[in-house]
Image (cartoon, rainbow, N blue to C red; front, side, top):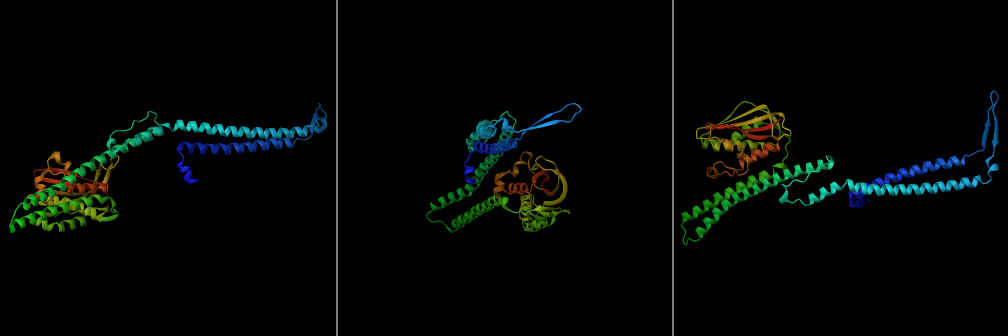
Length: 391
């Protein structure tokens, strides 16, 4: 029965449910009215005639109806049968008429929903940017259409971002492969390559495969962020201290001084992801710093208006501010640097082994924790980037 009802359309379900309710109601009314009428006929007794006179006691005469009307009993029985038959026929007609009316009324009421379903079936990945026409009825169907259009807009943005990401990833993967292929083709034309040429070839292949491995690792990290639990209680000061300890050797190579200011905040999230976010911010500040410069990490609490909230409201947030004395970021690039594969100076980024995904990964980690990352200030004296997380 359950499987059968699932195969029925919504129109037929509404019709059957309404018909069932009408049937139950009519049957109950039929039995109630019939029983009342029949019982009243069965309890017919002798006629009683009272004669009242002024200032005297009433005089009562009991008259047996069967004496006056010998066929009364048979007529009552016939009347009861006719009443029951007519009541039954009327009940059946009311049920059929109500069911038919329900079918056609529900068909008319569900027509906008049917039209919406037809339009939705025509939507493909190529026409996500085309919203559906919203009816002027200002009812549940129009609200559903508005909600569906909003969902289409979000899907279109997601598909567009995915296409751009896939194209950028393909380009980044193709570059080291093209370099290896070109060098191998040139090397294959040499009749007697020297040991130095072999060494250069091996060094080139090692370097390019390292870039491919690094890029693949970051891509895997970005695709697996959503599945990681974010329920740990984390001290940002302890996390930052661990990050600075792990990056000390890299900072010493560039003669960069790492400084952690006093301050701490405790939040709930994924230690692994937040470690990676702070690590990427500090590593980025070291890479694009001047020799002899410094990187300062300051943790503080502040009310912030997060763009990830809908609607944006002031929220108590923890700020991990990473400041450097580096080259700075131009105003037109301060929002773009968090996009996947974006580089301000592509040649310099590749020379440093960057894939253009470090800050994009930080942005995604912040978003998964309900926060954001943004440039607070940047000029020729350096930059300050803040990881903002709700408490």
